[in-house]
Length: 367
Ligand SMILES: *Cc1c(COP(=O)(O)O)cnc(C)c1O
Image 1 (cartoon, rainbow, N blue to C red):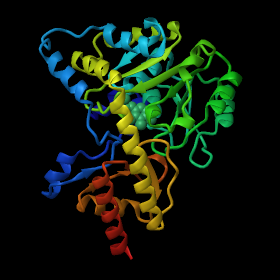
Image 2: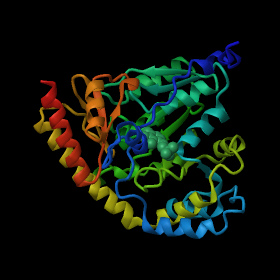
Image 3: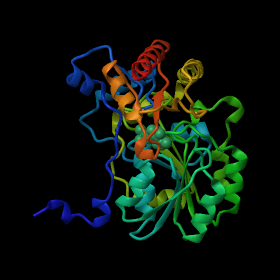
Image 4: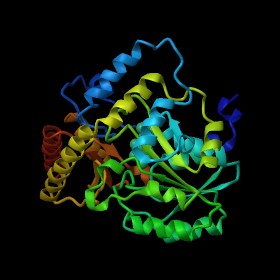
């Protein structure tokens, strides 16, 4: 028998998530070293030293179960953002939070709305619970909020997922656009506002979505320690929402979904404001370096508000492979309906330079 057939059809039809290639895997395949990975929007500075110290301290108590309520981390978030403990959900990465929202509120057959070219996990999390995803065509690779609202209302969707900035396109929605969308959307449709790259926004684009929670009880904000905080390997994120919404998300959560080392590191990382500032500044410079380099090579790119940028290149798949041979891992995004594009994460100055040199060589060979 085919054991796949034991799974419901909506599970069988899930397209597996395609992660960035790990450095060790490419080392094994090609026997090369000195590989630069610019494929998963990780922090090239690593993690804050304070977070690392907190991890070492937490290991001393590793035989004990973590605090299932995550009191210390929630308390740090309460003090930072002025929300209540009861409005915070902690997740094993923010990916977990997207799934908790789907599991808590969606039943088979329910409808979910997201944008074309939006983060792949919205479709995965929805499909995994038997819900039907509706992908709304984008405008210039960004979310078309009016069309998304219309689609949500027409289809009586339960959840709308919004990524701001979006991955892999880097597109950005202003505070005005988002608030106007929230005001017009019926209050019985939940909105998951995924702000994984919030810390990378330039000052003139920053907005206080947390203050909107009191006006919009259907809003769920999700954030992560994986990107600007440099803790992707630890898996920790948080969501803020109305207390009743939070209550439901916590009922489907694994009791110990965030491990004790991650909780301790996140508390320390949150306090290390200067590390996030350095990360932001490095990213600003690196973004300039890479986009100027792409322009010099005559390549089109989508202006990005994250720590990565998507660029258009002929023969993207072959180019991706050639870059691997040259020791640079970027991310193909054909699974985002962008087969002629690659996405590169912003790295250290030297990593960005290695990427641009390899890209120039690969383009030269292609001609
Ligand atoms: C990276 C990313 C996440 C989540 O990553 P976690 O490591 O699970 O926190 C969520 N949303 C978007 C848009 C991302 O790019």
